[in-house]
Length: 75
Image 1 (cartoon, rainbow, N blue to C red):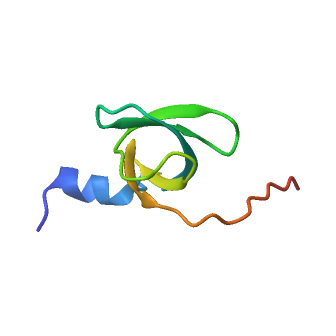
Image 2: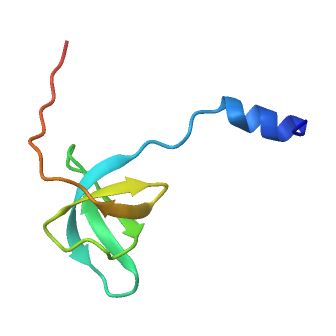
Image 3: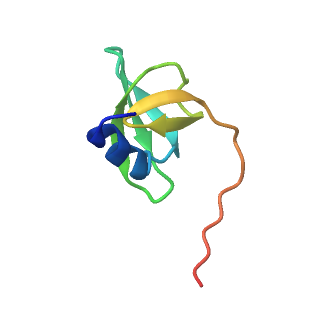
């Protein structure tokens, strides 16, 4: 049986996977990503070229994302 802390952690949601456009590669293992809402974030990883979309999870580039259209609707 898992300890109490492990059981509690299993109840919490995992981090979301975000998609953003890589704008700058810094050359030190990090890059700047622009999110769809216009905000920017500096993340770890340089595996995606500037101008391409990337999957981001926990501040780390997970890989290249497909260049699909983005729509935002309010209800």
